[in-house]
Image 1 (tube, rainbow, N blue to C red):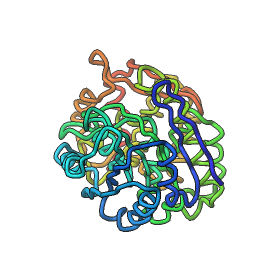
Image 2 (cartoon, rainbow, N blue to C red):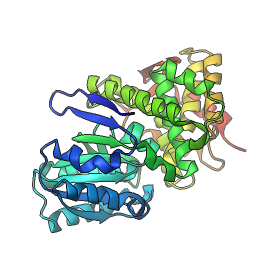
Image 3 (cartoon, one colour):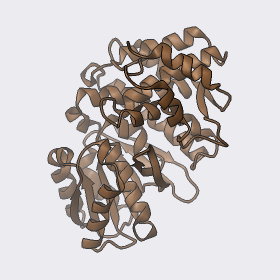
Image 4 (cartoon, rainbow, N blue to C red):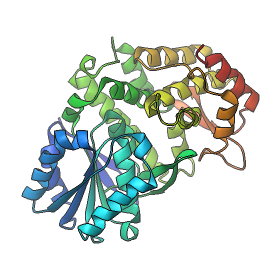
Length: 366
């Protein structure tokens, strides 16, 4: 069951390959792209322990010279100081412009490795081998790379497209349940903003809060449809000049929650789920869509075992200030992505702060 999804960009087209067991064909797939022989595999300790040897064996058998760079795990290490470790490995292994960094891990590893590839020698190859569901359907695709600033998420970065995204669904067997649930927030996001059929398939599933409840067919469908949505949107708008902004649905308030929580206690997908609930209710208040659609979204988020409330103790006024530091602010106006129906969304900067404040307070856990 192999699916190839093209990302059609004029200067940097590439394929997303989704195939069970494909981790073992990483070397031949990269060989077919005529990349240079020097490769550094960037990962974290847990992922590398599970999959590092398989990736390296495949690369070496294909004729690559391979070394590794192991970074600490977690969003709080997505910093410039951690990035320096990749640069040190690049220097130590004498990477050239034809060389490749392979990101073997989740979104944090993918974002940092991609940014290192964008920066080293003003740009070298990167291949994304995502090992979390969230990275497979979102972070690994589209070339957004970066690290966090202490005052905001992903404020330091660059667009740098991968040469290949290789997705092996079998590696998800080691994914912690909480990380799986977090990724379901982004799957639901695609259903809300782009793919009503995907949304309905999720509604039809009996349970969604664990990988084992999905079955191979639904998992493949989720991967393919989510990747197709991301690939289509990125192909139309590589650098977020217009359409691509809708991919940030749920991220406006979500990023503020993450930042104010110090990237602890609430992970990215959980924050996006909270942000989608907020955006959905704001959309109802502004008559962008109706309450029944918002309720369907709320039910699906709950069904996936995701949070629907802003954490108790989080200062709503501080959150409103944090929104002003968001990358999506334009001319001082916070831009929200709001759904107009299941399967469609729009971008607006006409959301009054008082409405954000009121909806946020209604959503806050006691």
